[in-house]
Length: 621
Ligand code: ASP
Image 1 (cartoon, helix red, strand yellow):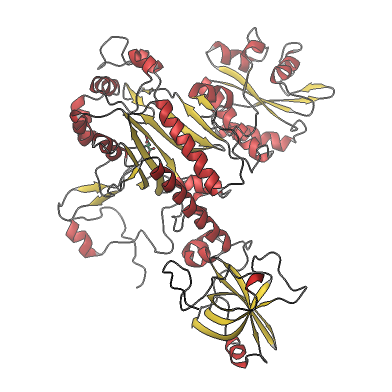
Image 2 (spheres, rainbow, N blue to C red):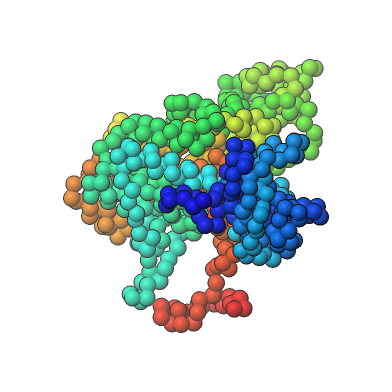
């Protein structure tokens, strides 16, 4: 039964995939091909579970019905590749497998051929829950990808990218590929560099993002660009970071901040519904928090708002003197006294409290004050210092009820917010406060344009040196002295807000972007505040600035992390779980054994020599 449809999955090796056959196929001939997932030898009958990425089908070899196939199946072992043909039969009543979509039927094989053999794999492929050392999974990634959870995640990722492409094409976007060998495009990380053979002594940088190129595409009139872009950033790795990663990179011309955010939001909703139709989105339109509001309420610019536990300002309770020096001094020196309530943690053990305090210290707090609300009143180790009734008033102000634990931090505004924000995130996980099914997107926008760089004596762009200023703050792009070339920490520029926005999903920064500065006068002012003359900026961003001499349209864009998005969609906390061939935390590829020592000829051709570095041993060939 060969198909004439060139797009059909049927080939001479199979009429159907291992996930296709159903009760309605009973009685017809079929041929399957795949890997032997499991083999059960019952003497007279041999059962093979045959697996491909579409599913698993039971194949039966009966010694009486087809002695040849029965004896061939005797040589088969797990992970052998076979093709088997026969008649689809209903399983005997009581032997159906309701957990498999193909579980009502089996293929009674009249013929089976071994296409290739396999060594015994280093770990179980047929047990999705088997604990396997990750380095083994990475070394034998092809076997790991055969495992159902990995296959499923890669399929989900493929669907995600497909949905992204569909939506963008429908919205008039053009997919343009930008080069990998370019000149440095700084995004705040170290560059990977590639020495040039044809131009000895010079290097390419791998793009940290296609930022300059996509802005140049706007000058080129492409109007709406997107790309599933590979980016490279040489930085220390964490669970949500890899040295090379993929982002949905897009840029639009003739847009306002609102218009851009509206498109991105609509696209995200459509893509989410296409990939995960059953997962509820917490709120559409997405909540929009200003950066200040996010920090004030959640102590984070990427809060998980699936649960409350908002930060409570205790200034009005303690401002006339609390009796506790740490609180009073923090307020007097311009700091903050703020609290969160951990529901039901009032009975926390000494050890649990110590752990929380340790966490707070790790994040930079000098200490963590706790108050437990009990039926008898409020207990706290600092109660003896507090003025009469103060402990109760603090608890009341936070809304804590009986059985709850109030955690207070008194420190500089930044430390107070950051520590409580991180404690909030940790407690949210520990107390399982967030509904795991819900996808809670939100926008954080209106970031400060600049941050004062004490060492450099200048204003640093908080995100991107090309981020635009919100129109109402345009007049603030100046210095106290009036000379933009002489910035100081009290400049009005420090109060300006950028047309910069981040998309957050369940406590992860999914992406960010901005409406760009495209007007030359504003660019020059902004660069001067950042301590650069236009000439110096030309050295770093020459091509883009030159392009801006030829009619740049108003434009803006964003980039969203595809790895993070796929990880969140598959309930993973590590992006390695949604990447086919990721790197370890020391940047290694265990399967390809990269990085590796270069051949001496390669170094000679490039005119390079390692100095002061013990050459890495080449693995035996
Ligand atoms: N280039 C930025 C990034 O890669 C995103 C953007 O501003 O569009 O994070």
